[in-house]
Every structure is written in C-alpha cells, then in structure tokens.
Length: 127
Image 1 (cartoon, rainbow, N blue to C red):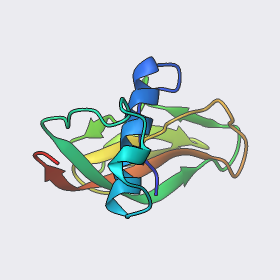
Image 2 (cartoon, helix red, strand yellow):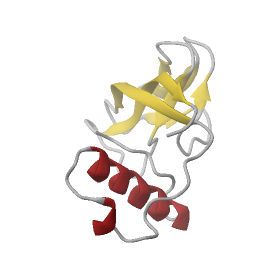
Image 3 (cartoon, rainbow, N blue to C red):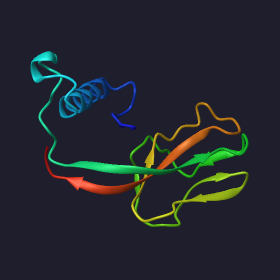
C-alpha cells in the first residue's frame, strides 16, 4: 500500500502520515484508540480519493524529461496526453483522469521509476 501524504518537506505530510497510520491500526484492530497519541487522528477531510496505482513509468535511459513541472497528485483529464518523453518517444496517459503519483527525476538512471500512474477508483465523502 502506498499512501501519498504530500511533499516530504511539508510539515503537513507528517500530520497526514500519522493520521493514516492511526486509522489503519485502529481499523485493523491492532491497537485501541487509547493506545494512540491524542493528536494523531485528525478531523476527516470533506473528500478523500482512493487511487489504484496501475503502472510505473520507468526510465529507459538518462534521456527522460517531463512535459511540465509535476510535483505529484496532478490529474491529467484526457487519455493520450503527453506527460513526458523517454528517448524522444512520448509518454502518454493510458486513461482519462490519470493521476501522477510521486513524479521525480532526482534519481534518474536507466531502470528507475520516474512516476507512477494512478486511476481514481472511488471518491469518499467522509470517514
């Protein structure tokens, strides 16, 4: 399971990670609410998305570049949209409303995943 909590340098990413961890532990029955730090569970947001990561985009070589400045969780509305180029070949979204998960060229080298493609499965109004 991969939980996108936000950018690593944002303080809110820690808050989100703790909240998700606490909810997972509670729902799985591993701990009781009294076992968790009091500030770990935050009020539920108005809407949450369940996103299934369908495939990675893996760099074939050092010749990979994105079509834009992506930081993560961007939703590309139309299937077939170009999100980057690998060895001069366009990298396209496979379906409508494709979410870009953890795009990064920081570790770029052949065989490294540069972004994961996510399909929005469900929208949850509240937990």
